[in-house]
Image 1 (cartoon, rainbow, N blue to C red):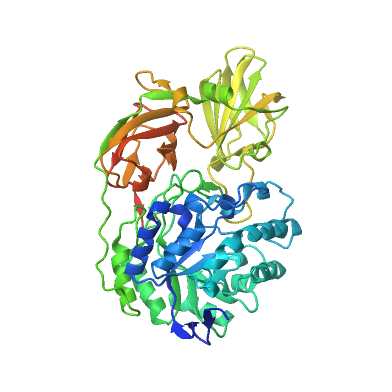
Image 2 (tube, helix red, strand yellow):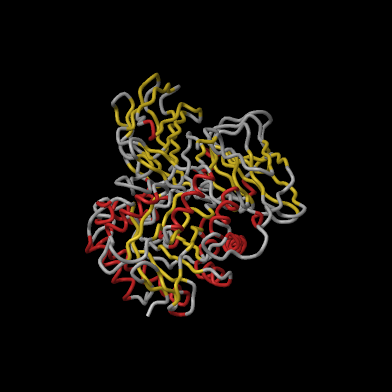
Length: 587
């Protein structure tokens, strides 16, 4: 018998009445050295449960390889720490998670096959899911409640009613969880819409809702769909996420707290989305595509009760007061903000230009036309395409198949222009200085769409390239690895500004590691690493203007900063600050 069961209007945990007061905390968005701290702060706010998704694409980057459960992906360790903190866990393994995460969590090697019907009973999809669950569940079973662990409930799919209506697919997932030893309560979640609840629910599985306001109406729709059982909001949206070029979203604290009080006063259970948002480290951010493509920023602060750097914010205090009206809250003081590194400047005095470095360091695939990224085994990141132009003069360069997602064009190493998917740009006027000039096209994947029909859209150059209608043939296609070059390839940087894609490296001293924020004034666009840890993307387009650096990334003494600048910087200097800058606010 599962530890968590349902009654006509609530939950029982081991036979005793239990209300789930949970908050979302994604282990893969938090440095593992900080998991225990974040879990402790969840308990001190009054939460009795935490919720996490499981990103399939990170755990299984290779369809034939083993499951990755190391470092930031050590889910069993995260579950052990949650149990040790006195918290229960809601586990949401997908296979699709959305989460503003690259591709919604679906692996690039799977979505590369455009004939597969994603999130359906297509045996090619369910077969891949089954193989994944065969790997994922055995190491998790000891952490389920049936074995004395903290996991009390497991989600089947994720907001499926907004995507499809294949009940046989949902049934296959539920039966697959049971067959692999999951005895715990199963649940689905969908937006509080009658059609979506109907399409995304499954007989015998608890239906829950996702909403951020209109509490009474939303709970009423959920009760109309499911006449008996607990009322639960599995995603109570207390903030929002940001796109590059947009504002930084926040939600009024008093408004969110009042709606939380309404939820709890109605007797419902709740999962705050998010309790602690964390960071889209590296290249893990997702994107939306409604009328146009819109990539998500690196920060997943979400205006959550616990900030991106783990500090209690205004909502932490307000929500704690609300929870205390309805449930016990630990009689311990609210944690203080973490210590921050004193402001520190860095000179990035060594450089490795990308355009000459990549051809000398990385092998190429060859094609008459450019090869898309998935044919190169590149799930995300940069691809450098190179060809030659047979004639000189002015002309119109055309990328008829499209670009995924942003292309920088160079002729004989000189910047010629930029094309962006979000602006539906496919042509560029260029001037070719000589016959046989080298044409380089550096294409950046800005993040896989995580919601809707554009999940799995291909990356790289997606078709033939022509100049004034004449096809350019004979392409070298080089995926650029995700890490940083060996320090030996860096040479002293020239004085003054630089306007070519290049890796820049500098060192700085730290007396005692502490949280900090990387500021790059005068830089344009790229990615950054500290001591080899991928902080994420930066872009002067904003709204985000700093990157969070977790304290465990730093070490006493000398530290390395590497910045891959894709355009140029007026001065190769950076600064670590003691406060974030997430941009102008939109409430």
